[in-house]
Image (cartoon, rainbow, N blue to C red; front, side, top):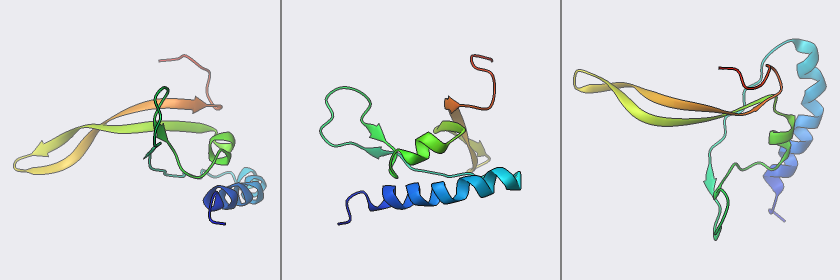
Length: 96
């Protein structure tokens, strides 16, 4: 039964880690990759693997996308990105 295994493991790990993270006064960053849902006719076809626990426990969620390359001479030195705040439980909302 490998269906939902990653989601189950993430949920268990986050339940155990939450208290320790709060006490330790540190930042934990999870990096995830978008996946394409198969056969979606309406709504957003993109999803993040790992289940709902990651979305629930996160204080800040950001959608970071590459929009252009930064070139210096003939080589690429970086990427220009667009960051969209998807969830924010830390700062007041609707500020720019």
